[in-house]
Length: 207
Length: 120
Image (cartoon, rainbow over all chains, first blue to last red; front, side):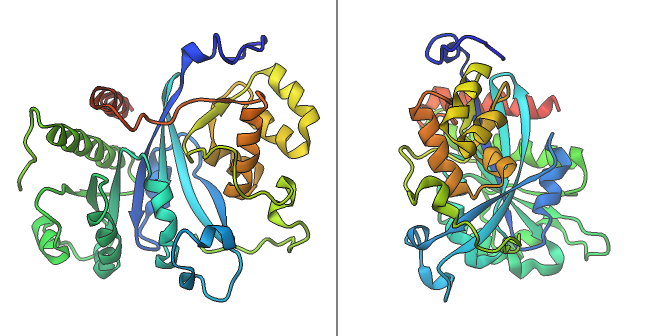
């Protein structure tokens, strides 16, 4: 990787590096950073976006009342899959008043996992609404908290009115294998969606 | 995830390092990766302290815009302006974020990500 000669257009260009991202969404304190940390090769990093007057124009400025600048933190992790392929996992800012940032985070993403805490199921309404109105493939992952009431997956689907074609999985955001399965589900769902949209092969799965 | 206050206070206005510019020369995605060579880092020394810090972070290891902002502790928007400048100046190499168009390319990428995850 460490070429001493300065030749950005030649040797380096032939070794393109592609990055992909998966978005982890959900209400505040639902375990997004825990999930990212369970699988990321680096300790989750925080990047701070500064909302200035210029940035506020992207969305409704009334969501940040009485302030010219606000700092919004988002956490993310990284999985280097190959020398030329890196997967990033981005957690959305949890507080609803920062949703104007989500549009930038989801742009170009493979898909999203919406994390749900069964103890505070109503916190999931707003993130689910958001993704229902976007074209990004998403899955819903129920994060099992110790001592939380256990629901059947289909009960939760009904309670949250999750469309039948949206995958719903149980997970433990602390467990690497479990998180891996959530991410695999996101990518598989994205592939199915893409194939369905392309009008060949798989029909959109029902139920 | 709480909004934070800089404990140093507002001694330096965030966009002072970009001389007040808030619009990058090109819009770089959060996950777009950048890298540079030792030679590029050496040249970046003359581009100013903040740009040099960015180049140093990317030496020998591709880093996303998000990582650059996190490691240098710059707000994302500020890092984006400086990174775009460095790319324009030939001091940083921009690699592509995921291809947004083309069914085959997109499927191929998703397939690679899927097998990458399964191999973890």
